[in-house]
Amino acid sequence: MSSSKSFISATVIGLVARVVSIGIRFVSLPIILRVISAERYGLWLIITSIVGWLSMSDLGIPSALQNRLINLLGLGEKKRADALLSFGFKLLCGIGVGLFVLGILFLFVPVDSWFSVNAELAIEFKIAFILCLLTFALGLPTRVGGVLFNVHGYLSMPVFFELATSIFSFLMLLLAVYFKWDSIVILAICSLVGLSVGSGLSTIIGMIKFDVKLTGHQYSSEDNKLLMSKGGLFFLTMIGELLILQSDAFLVGTIKGAAIVPMFMIPMTLFINFIQLQNIWLRPLWPLLSSYKAKGLIMELKKHLVKTLLGSLLFAFLFGIGVILMGDLFIKFWSNNTTGMTIQMACGIALYTLIACVDNALASFLNAFDRIESRLGYTIFFGVMKLISGALVLYYVVDGIEFLPLTYALVMLTCSIPFAVITLVKEWKSWQLS
Image (cartoon, rainbow, N blue to C red; front, side, top):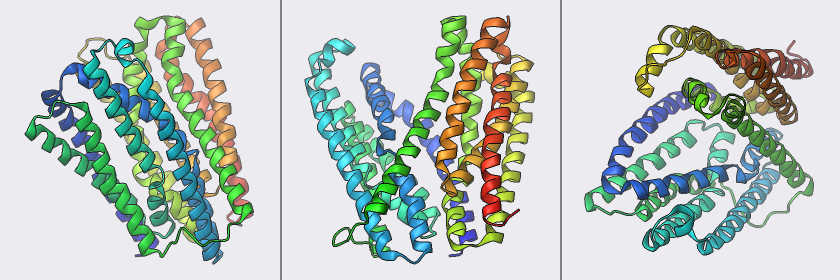
């Protein structure tokens, strides 16, 4: 399959997967609440929240591994690529084992007093937590399956296997409903089975298809050190972006009070989450651009850069118009209140969406060109400037909450975008694309 066709199929499958995933979440909640009690569901949310925070524990290894493998295969270094993949796989296995061993210590935590539940639920919570932790630990090394398919140009396969994981987990949930198993342990088993079918199969099939062997390699200390250093930069970038996203509620609550937080967080969180739809085409674009760069396909690289920027701008423009015209009505309906949001906030969110979509596209380009150092730099710069400007607006402007999205948009426009553009222009010149 050609790279362009693979990119198109990955985008289409990604769109289908996103729709199915949203549908499964929408249908699963009432099903779960019919099977288990509200108290058990609360414990389940605590477990998924803890495991969710562990998502960064891969230390950026899969992202760094993908870029390095594409470069090595582009140079015809198949043996070095296989050795590096073997090292990355074993490293992720080690991280997974370490996390699971640490998680065992959770068995000694007094869950009943922490969360005010009886002894039976406390035991159930611990078993479910260990199973979810096992699922996560097993999932770390299986991430190389998606890396393998991306590296070899099968961009739609990782999305397909993720979709299979969601579907099989949902089928297990239906089975639990049929037998009326009132236990969060069953939910944990559903997750474990879904992972085994999806991620597990993708890794096994990928290694067989691309003839990857995990033993008998002569490891390159240079490649291994580079993988770990680049992985560390990806890891720090993820932490920075997470802190930036999670800082809003704390900032608003500290300066304006907890009662004001929902007025900002509900519309901001709801609409900004829609920006993630952009990842449907940015996610497969990253390995595609890396492949073009490694192979020296300058014209193909240039064409996809331009198309992505134009597509991101069009998506953001249409979405922004929708926020301005319908955002207030949507917020009132979705959050079941009469407050809604003002036109100032709607316009600010629309502008923020436009700039954020361009910023996401530029970040994807930096990932593809292996310029993660630059991405980390402007992530930190934007985070600091966002906190400072947000605090000043909230503290000195009477209706600062209304102008906060506009403030964030202007900070991103003046800080993040120029930083990323300068880096890309240098890269452009180095590849004689100017």
